[in-house]
Image 1: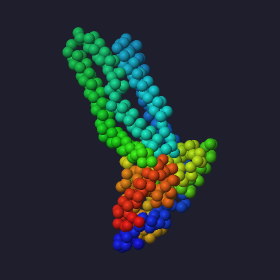
Image 2 (image 1 turned 120 degrees about the vertical axis):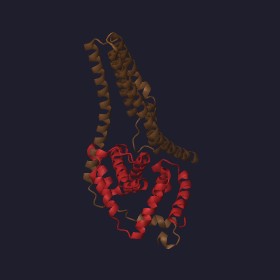
Image 3 (image 1 turned 30 degrees about the horizontal axis):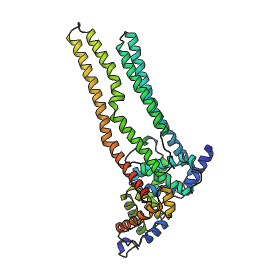
Image 4 (image 1 turned 180 degrees about the horizontal axis):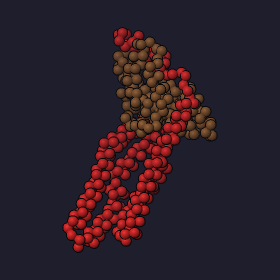
Length: 213
Length: 171
């Protein structure tokens, strides 16, 4: 009896057909090969996360070291402010990642705790990107502004061309900062907000199940 | 638990229950790429979750729970592991798409049923799938962390809706 043949079908018929159907599952699964690939996948994902965090920290440390070295070798002490800014960003990043790892939920817990953990993660990402100005961009601004102002003051007697170069460098920095800010706000709007709404809907469905009981 | 024990449990679950995971995948994801992506996620999460499995729940309940939890937070089109895909998982899914021994009518009906389940909200889709799999209300509520009362109320609506979609009667 199929749906096209006109005879009404009950849900129990449907359930019987579902249970009788083989769903095309292959019977000769090579579990050992699958295990090897899953473990490789697991290691690759862990490594990918570790590399991402490590990369950010190394980048912040390198930038700090470069600015500090330049400050000492060129006797340009305003660059120390840039180094301090990079250090602040790097430290914030390390502490934030460490705190987020502690909050991770594991699969197999209750469904609502998994969804709440995902929701917290997404909300935290939204918070980070919305506030990127304060924790990522602003710590770098005093150093850059002081460096440009000092350089401009030192080059005040060397003609207009030097001043123009400094202004252009200032504009390039401002444009780069603006782009970083805009790209991150767009990511919030296009990717993270819809995700948050989806997870909130799921959570509210589960909450309504609790009220129903 | 040692790594060898974890591996042995995973292999046993794969041999006995891969079908459950594939059914969850087909109930939540459409299209080869999405199905592949979701199954890869389920397998990795299942392997990681073995440490938390204390035997309080039945193995099948645990596998459904981890698979459905993964499917709930999985996001269509989000390719996180493009570079780390398991080619064997792709092969298993490709064989699954080709290989069914049931007759054409039933196959078509089951395909329509999967398509209808995918249209449901995720929580309802999970309830529908577990009910079709023959789990009792108590087992569904245990696997999903929902109250039995809620499962019962939801199921009567879901049954009617699914049968309406497939053009039958809901008795």
